[in-house]
Image (cartoon, rainbow, N blue to C red; front, side, top):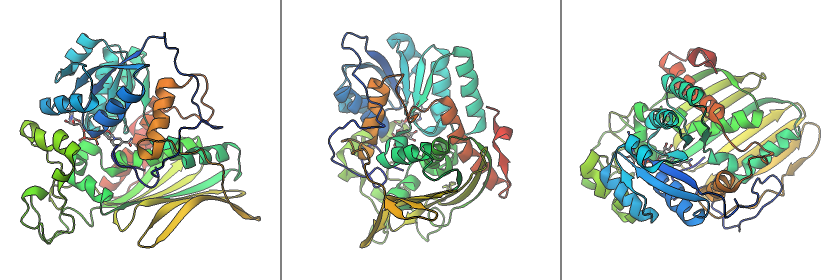
Length: 442
Ligand SMILES: NC(=O)c1ccc[n+]([C@@H]2O[C@H](COP(=O)([O-])OP(=O)(O)OC[C@H]3O[C@@H](n4cnc5c(N)ncnc54)[C@H](O)[C@@H]3O)[C@@H](O)[C@H]2O)c1
């Protein structure tokens, strides 16, 4: 449902609505000023870490959160992030040392996906609560390691699913709780990624399955979490198809990265990373440490994720989810339909080239069709304000008031990742159906 933290987009429609508290919102009174501030250490100080969990927290939640340490394997990037965040917190390249020296209450994990599990498990072992960016993990062994560490430590894991905080997502949950469609029978969820945002995944670390678990985990875990949350059910089995039909090997020329490319003039995907000063500080100036190229060529032949994906998920309550994601489209957006015994809910948010299809609509099986009004106003902030809503819930929300169940726990993180993992295992095995319980017993 989204791109990096500094760029807002459609599903998280960029919005300027003022902060508002409405029905369904879980924001309550701020933590009492005299209450002890939450000591939060951050591992992974790239874009998401330094902005959403760094700068935004430092600037907006300094009364309730103290950033006590920053850690990244890239020595230069952690220093660049420290300046961008505007914190005096000490920086580390050694995670254990950071925990021992800074004694955080909680660790925020914003490293690349394939490394979340090792930091989550280690932080739990060292006695900290953990908050992790999605996805929780990228394979079944990592999932088991986290579950074991959580069980042994008794500490708490939160997965920071900001997509739940989109006003339309909340309204859909509200309508389903009210049984506005009767029992749900099936869901159609189509994710459209364009030649800008969709293409960007193929430039970056996400292009390798070992880093991202493919976009079925990295990206679709947002969408699978939404489906799991809306349906209030758990996935049982998954069947999938996936292919790399557009990026990677599907071009006649390629290079290492855009800045040095001899095909700049003819490549429609040429992109100049040096136009973004934040990216220059976070990535270009730090290349000497790890060789990571933020403007990597999206035609590289080592790309081993899919750009075209179809997944069917069967749920415990009998619902079928039909999910597709395509990453090279002329426009961005989503088309989601929830089909119930008494009607259907449509959420569309896509368009481009002179047309647009936007809105949430409820149509009764034998009745009229109405556009759903009265959505919560959008907040100011990343991802159309969803990041602000998430921050408010986590840092200022009352533990006892969450009527929509917006808080995502370890189980929610595990199940959403496991659907993506089952999907790529299915593709690896010739679209064989994979049972979730054969991967991990929850
Ligand atoms: N919820 C959202 O809307 C959203 C948006 C963007 C990113 N994310 C998530 O945030 C995380 C970070 O994404 P990003 O866009 O900031 O990527 P990024 O490349 O900007 O940052 C990743 C950072 O992790 C560091 N890193 C890599 N391996 C490491 C290791 N072994 N130990 C410590 N640090 C390591 C890198 O050096 C880099 O600084 C990802 O898990 C991604 O899924 C979530």
